[in-house]
Amino acid sequence: MSMQHVPLPEKIVFTAEKEAHTATMELSSCFPGYGTTLGNALRRVLLSTLEGSAVTSFKIKGVAHEFSTIPGVKEDAVEIMLNLKKLRFKMHANEPVTLTMKAKGEKSLTCKDFAKDSQVEVLNPDFPVATLTSATAVFELDVVVEKGQGYVPTEARDRQKLDIGMISIDSMFNPVQKVSFKVENVRVGQMTNFDKLLLTVTTDGSLTPEEAVRESAKVLRDHVQVVIGKEADAETQVAKETLTEPEEEQVETKHTSKKEKKVKSTTRKKDKTA
Image 1 (cartoon, rainbow, N blue to C red):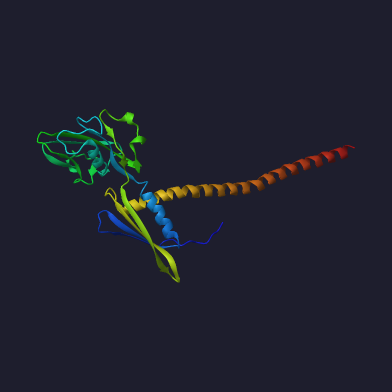
Image 2: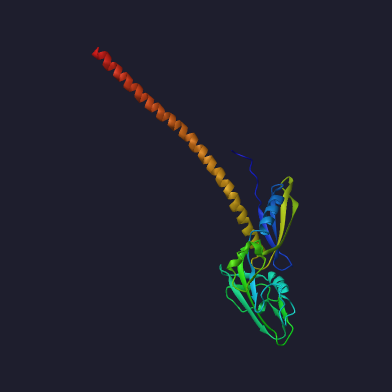
């Protein structure tokens, strides 16, 4: 079935903003109404689907559960757990990686105090983890960093897989921290109601805003392709059925004509014999 052509956007530009890891995509000129359609779709995917890295569990030496206090440490286990939820990483491995932090004496510990690991890049190294308030304080922390999507609560994980002493925590994997968009009118020829989409994206630094937008667009494309594929299959099936029916009729006609010829030849033989 033919339909009127819908013009596609002709311009896409990414402009960096003053805020860290933030950029605005300008997409124009969109068919009237398509700015909001594309903006909503991209925003939902950006905030829910992209893969990122986060802490999924942790273990503090001498701590049995998350409600414990730690000798010589200002924060209790719950406060440290809340800090760990905000740590951001970029992983170069697909399997979980364990990072270790060991410290003694009075000092403030941040994310950069984790032992270096080539498979994990710390994105906010100055973010606080714990504060040791005693010269005799000893602090040992292990955290497990994994890749994932969206928000995963502890209830969604299999606790039986945790090592002894490990405490599971809720994890926010999404690398996109903030998304907003607005639509402005733009002139195309004599038309003044075409759309210009301005989509502003802030990430945690594990990928650029442009990479995030393009990955989200791929997710949308793959889902729409399923619908397109089914429609194409249906059209192909209809075409096959349309082609098959005449062929069947032709075959039946051929068989019928052969039978008629046999009957006629038999009748002629009988007439000659008589």
